[in-house]
Length: 284
Ligand code: F3S
Image (cartoon, rainbow, N blue to C red; front, side, top):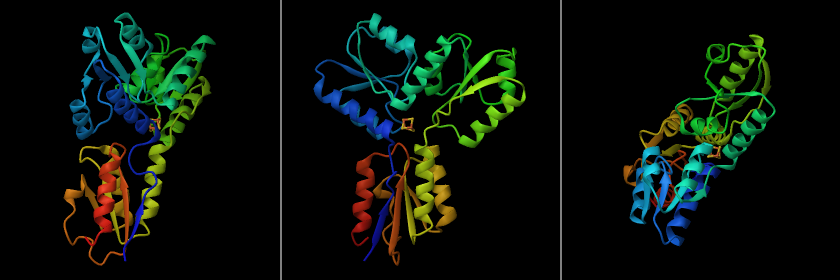
């Protein structure tokens, strides 16, 4: 008799589940055209499925500017204030699926600027979430990945700085950057806005993998967070299988494995996880 241990944190985090559910609900209820500003998640299958239900992806700002009617859904990463204004000016209906944890950062940025503080975001300047956060701040909002970046962008060390973080940033890296900035003499108010969904998913996967005969990690080959999960699991469990869907499971690969763990990357839909769970549970 096989025992299957499915990770509680497998698949979408809270914010992504909420955003994807919102799009499916709108697709069903809305009679007019529905769009997402950027793909709702990095999963082609989900995006294709939504296309068949009449939900189209607006790839960039130019596409949004050209749009004069319909509903625009803002994804979990959030967007800057200007995008809401653009939608309003174009007469578009906005359905906001920004993750509440990201929304909270937008509010911090506004409040800190209102106090007269300069805002500094620790994160990848090209990541849509960071671009969105920046879009709630003043012109002088800095985006840094090191103390040297801060020196270049905010040379005046007498400035009062309020530091926030991209939600998926690594805590140890964030702490080091903040400490380095303080050592350089900057006056800093620090807001740790890191979301621990990724960290929790990794810790749980590691814990399960250390206690099973075989571990299955489900997710796209190009998904960096899934690859990281597979790497963590293979350190703990030699029989770790990295698959994209149930079809990738080779018959017999779980022979003589009594305890089997399953986890999945952040953009793996629930039905794929369930399908794998069912197949593994049968006499596979
Ligand atoms: Fe997910 Fe929201 Fe955290 S989108 S990773 S729950 S910030």
